[in-house]
Length: 256
Image 1 (cartoon, rainbow, N blue to C red):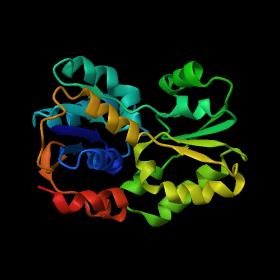
Image 2: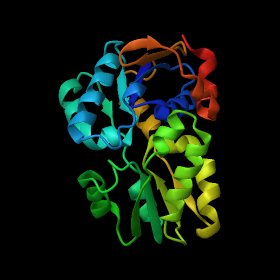
Image 3: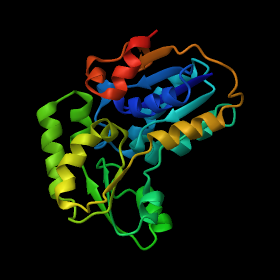
């Protein structure tokens, strides 16, 4: 079994790690375009074109399913990607976990890139699934880029900025960017002091991985656990910054 994932950069590590935990034998294709980051400030048309480029490069490796492991790309490019590749290639988007967060009730904050925050797509999810929860959107400029480059000071500053704009007493925090899942412990440390003692964090990696496996036509077909890395369609290796995060360290030793 082979599953491809695309993202602007290393945010796809979270879903790739979740897939490996579910299926250690799965062959992974990681397609990104880190030189084009950040995608958050880009226009929807620019994000769509960049996402299509990453998806086309991944599709050339004949995966059984393709995961858009990027919230910003899912917001702006999911329809275009599905129009080009489905039904021949199952496409799995990444949706902010607003529905399960709202089901918990109380106060909810959604941390996301500037492009996702306030988008019609995210506002639609809040309208359709927010229920009676008190939901606040929090843009996190610079955080995904800092995570991508392993910029420790930048990560600290971006998290502190977002935490300062997050309402006190929140009961749930939705991680609306896959990059944020790589630094969830640092986000928790910044937000927890002013949050509910029962604060819940909701990412998307586990749900996306499970859905990808459900969409594969023949899930019984074994893989060999290889990892193929593409940067703008060119064969590459995992960047050194990937090993700064637990999800990257679990993948690095099996790069093929």
